Length: 255
Image 1 (tube, rainbow, N blue to C red):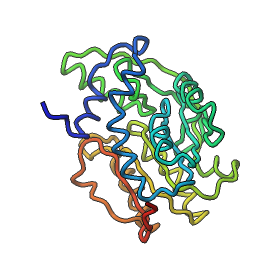
Image 2 (cartoon, helix red, strand yellow):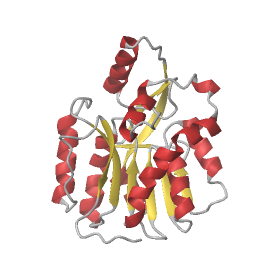
Image 3 (cartoon, rainbow, N blue to C red):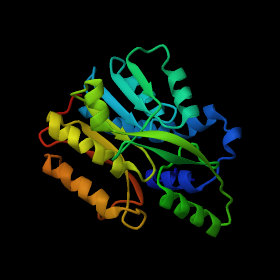
């Protein structure tokens, strides 16, 4: 049987089962998704300098950053992961690398305390978006698959506010993977782009019009990116869940 297309694998990961959270075989799970992650890293590498800085939002246990660092060992990273147990795994992974900072935070469009929902069927499906959680649950029930969600209170920060405090003025890559919350993450990035004039490459997991609870807000964020000089992409014909690459106009390939 040929491998599933990338988009179908992502949907299956959201709605398919991999066992209860407490029974996860982490090495096996990483092996399962590493090919997908590596393909996404390959997309951004041509625009990412050897000593570049990545902001990894929804870092989970740090696999995307880890694969990137295998290819760019001199790179620096700031990983944002709101789920405490995953954040600790991420910190342990990079404990010996002083170029990686791991923060137990979510990013969004306001500074607040919020609830993140953690599905038992997918360690990568944690979401701050309650309406999307309900939709995922309904889809699984329709297919007669059980799903339960644990809750965790997390801190959410606006990236521009955090960057001001951290005195971050330049980033080379922003990657977001936040299960329907990515548009809100990007809303918090927009003031940073305007204030600094920095134009990082952005790789963001977006949802199609048929799946997204806030399509108009997502579209408005993308339009602002175009106004900042990013090359246009086709969202009208995108797959249900797709990692969209936004490249600034005139950005030279780094390698």
